[in-house]
Image (cartoon, rainbow over all chains, first blue to last red; front, side, top):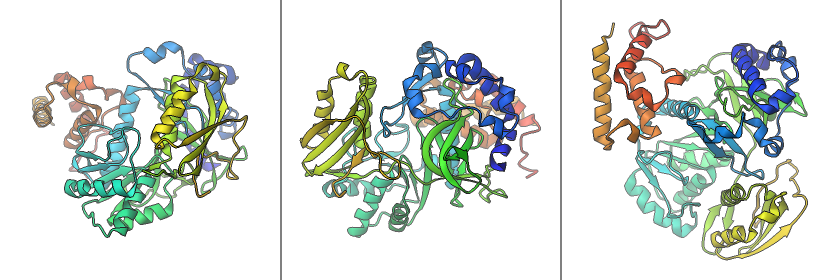
Length: 411
Length: 85
């Protein structure tokens, strides 16, 4: 298929180096790549002989994806974790140089929207600010969550209006809640020119609510912790894939789909040499299209990658506050990072404002963890609601195939 | 052709301005956001693009070497000439 053959042709020399180095240095690829690198680069058909790597494979044999355990303490190396929204968080090793390259590229993409964006006043709805040197307003006191209840919103508004933010970054659920609050109360925050949303799937109604309320443009930013930014919206509303950094494939029922069709994203990082990810199944539903002509925005990437599925957060409503369900990913990830392999899967089901069922599938190190630590954290964050722990062998998927980590009250 | 000493002076001014504005005393006190801000400013002023392997804080510590690198970049055929555009 042209969309993949073209990428293969454009990236042949980088892929050759990636495959041959990985074969030499990375135990997993040494085992699964039976032929020499050049064999897999003959054409796209040969490339598909490389097995697709599932997240579960990486979780179960994590150390075989790095050259040696010493890399974790090597200078210039950074370790990050995936969010844990699909179960156990995955440890990702990257070089700091790669991280800086990627962050620079992100700022370049942002500057396409406004050349002066690095100096503009930013309203930040996430918890960890990229840099203290940004002119930033971060709402709320708590380090793990942003309270989105009406009372808290009322207290934020005063701060926001006096700060006069020129742009905003946040998860769609929080930005939409703020927009809806302003609309209901007929509050006008007309200083905001841009809103960048990431971390969750951006739904059309959310974009509409934010654009209409703040009379601004919305930028969709699609990425994953394993890779960083994968595609970023341009001022012509096209989600340009960062094609210089990845080999992108879309697979449905085990087979690649043509340009413009929907399937699951399988991605190869051309940049991460510390922990090569080759044909990694990210599991998100996407559509990849190859444009016939370059977009008028000036970006050279003709590959447009639209996310069509992925994490959708819900609101957790307790008697005293309203927070994003991403809090569960945060708390479980932190616990599983501390007690490795203690929990394999989890799901929280809200039964009433004061009652939550916590389903867990035990990992092979469950007996080594102190589960009460986690339950206590959940109680604290959920206003001391009743927490019922239920151990199970399997957590049922939804019809879409996804397993939501939180099932809200209304369902 | 841009003179090496002009490049050197221009970067020096840029860094001094950043230091004064942000209170940073040395390159080691910059965070990655400030580092990227400086790199992008240099790219804008000289119409060049840094190679990936040069994106380390150390590059700002040796201004002679950095100036030379920028001059080579300006002179390389890949660099776009603003006037030609």
